[in-house]
Amino acid sequence: MPQRKRPVRSQVRKQRQKQPPSIPRTIRHAVYILIERYRTTGQLVRDQVLELFLNDEIRPQAVAWSERLILRQRTIDRVLKECVSRPVDQVQASLWTILRMGANELLFGPADSQHAAISETVEICRLLTHPEWTGFVNGVLRGVQRLLTDQVTKEIAANAYPFENHEYRVLNKEIFPDLEAHFPSYMGFAFSLPEPLIREWDRRYTREEFIELCWSTLEAPPMHVRLNRIAVEPAQWVERCREAEIAVSTTEVPESIRIDQKVRLSNLPGFEAGEFVVQDIAATHAAKLLNPYPGQRVLDLCAGPGTKTTQLAELMLDRGELLATEVSPRRIEQIEENAKRLQISCIKTLLIDREDPYISDEPFDAILIDAPCSNTAVLGKRAEARWRYSITELHLLNDIQMQLLDTASELLVEDGRMVYSTCSIEPKENEQLISRWLETHPEFTCSEMKSILPNANRDGGFCALVERRENSEEIENVDELS
Image (tube, rainbow, N blue to C red; front, side):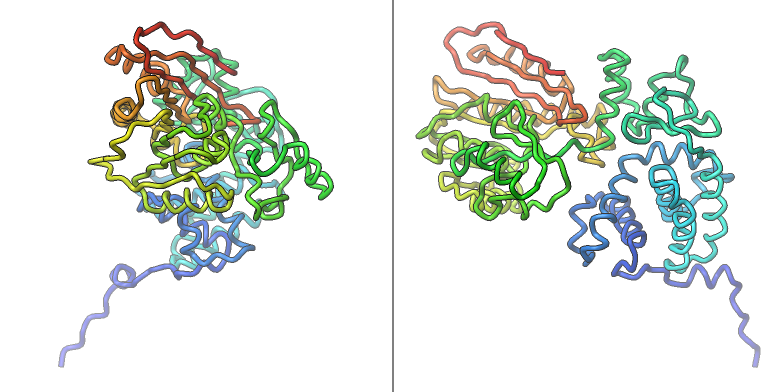
């Protein structure tokens, strides 16, 4: 009887199932799963966390490392390509994820953890039943390590990348584009931003403004909370924080308080009593610009998760009718949860169809349009948003934004007012879009605009007050904060 031939080793490898364990065993294993899911499905890191059964010790660091990797991936890739001997398109996508993980730790982690960063990243290969990757990963990461120095500088340079505290970490080699000949390209690689966005910002801003703006995209600003003025006075709440030895600071917006230390939200005074909600100071301007009165009928389009909705309700002193609409059932739940915690009763929710958004036969006195946008004013806290930016995406967003203005205008009473807001700093979504819309709607006028550039202490954003008038007028006031 003839003997069966033994399959060669490469065939055995192809036949073997190599699925990673479903429950993460370490922080790095959790990061690998989070990044791979994001890469293959687009599912955001924070949306995955509950599915992975991460314990309290693993979760914060796994999320932070994953989001930093996504945020910094263009810089990471630039460094890796200096150290990988084979063409990048010949490296499996999952293996490239592992290389990114190790380089992420080496480039942005503490200097005394470099040995662990390499050895533990190599160990991930074995955990994923890919021992054949270990030598390659070890060699590439050793190459990254050799590029690094202990020096930091305040000066931008082709052999340095943004590290932290507005300082650049110096490399042993110039791997970024020449600053004089290719300044925008340097900024794109060093600050990990897409080329179309870099070209726009380079055209609009001075070099100093450009650099400062790019720094704002690398880290979220300090957390702010907006106090519920129906429930508590700012001075009283701040005093209770100080009694509890929680560091906070007041701001130019009385109800907006900056939290100056890491603290669980549930440990802040009045969490259960609904005395505050997390909201950046820049995001408070839209509702205040609309300024709804108690007893009015108000609409909040695109209302989820309800942060601005509850602010509108507070301005109305919880008296009147406030309808919050959303196309997402989960966001409807979030609005209702926020309203319940803040003990607000005037908010009603409505789940609408994106394709046929019927809302009401009765008009509204005031409408807030918090439109979907490119998020370029909040890139420091939304790691993945930068990679969605493109001219094509911007055109699609413009269509949605114009449709929302059309919808709102048809639901407004004769002397009504509406505010259009975005968390973008792109004129095509903001000033230019409002101007375009007014050209075809002469019965409306824009009486005020506010454009806020992000910085180290706050997000940015845009809002415009549009009112129905018998005689259209020119824009009376344009206020830009930088």
